[in-house]
Length: 415
Image (cartoon, rainbow, N blue to C red; front, top):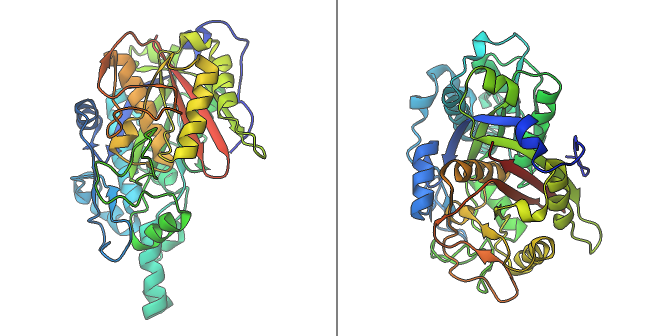
């Protein structure tokens, strides 16, 4: 993951919207909806997917709620030959990629042989698969470990399986990063489009809802101890005390504007700006990432119609983000929302799901709500959207912060 801006052109208002990479397909697997349509409808209804864990017995753990993707039947989405060699995260990724490609109305087999690629983000890889095979190793011996363990746990496995299944043989890769990774992956895909790729599948999906993964989540020390799913994750609230973790994310089909227009594809919006920064000692740089992303898009702060916040759900982190937004836009001068309050934080899938929300916000001209929080804390001077808000939206800003000081920002614009 880089700490500098990527591919910043000479700034002029809205320049990127006409010439940048555009999104023509969306695929979603989220705790409050499987599939883009179901998830978006639930999000606008303010319907949460945070509930008691069912993927393993969490009764002995101090935290027992999470955002699980509902209604996902593996063999409805994958051929039987893939089931023994894939983790849940890869199965979710394959389903999201298939939906995105179908939504884009493109046939990858009709593209130049090396013209389409895949870039995904992951922070955990196939965690559940890895746990199962390590248990077999410890309890039964090496002869009982699946040969698929050699790759099913790996961070790049989602990219590889999507590439194989759809014949996407162009430049591909993986960004190994946490919350910020979902934006970094799309930015990397944009670079490939600028280099001449015809099409890129990109975004992030993560899942680590298993005892091994849960131990890591708990050890990080940031999970909310509140047992009530409706009150556990309260971004920007005075009562915020941590976040809820979830699984899922979103994948996209990214093309050049010229290519999408030539085939008369439906375009959700353009990925017009991006930047990444890294915090220094006692020097948070989220504001710098946002400002540099605006520069990349050729926009000014007044041009942004809504911000999709990182929304850590912890008092100090929320205060720092609110202060960064107030410094850049002015106190309460731009609508701010955090629909991830309905899903939990999805690791590398979280920012990608926010990108999907931003694109559908542009399409439908409605800002999705933040749930749980009814009023931001006095030290968080933001205009928090707590009910769907119909308004004119041309440019959106998505923010993400990863553990250890990573910051990423992206601008999505209407054409």
